[in-house]
Image (tube, rainbow, N blue to C red; front, side, top):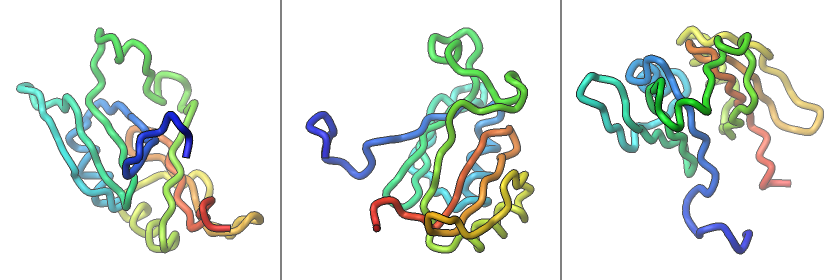
Length: 143
């Protein structure tokens, strides 16, 4: 482990912004199997901060906040032609099961499920707000 890393469950935590973060929390839990770890709503119903866990990993997310210091640094996919500058890879036990759940929830499959040349089986999809997600059985920690 890097000398700078803290000894904790997950040292890298992707952070996302959503226009309808409350709805996306429910969607991410239903479609992908995330679990609510903490959700802090604002008085207006938007989400100030949320933490969703998946195994020993986690994502943090909140509502788009136009005019905030952090919000000024982030663009939503539909503001930049549907592109992403980064995406999460989620290691799963059964990629076919997650693929079926994602399809049933309305995820847009952008790379269909397949066996990879380097090992594992996976797929890539977009959530309802256009963020790119990658799921697969390839575990880079296991060689």
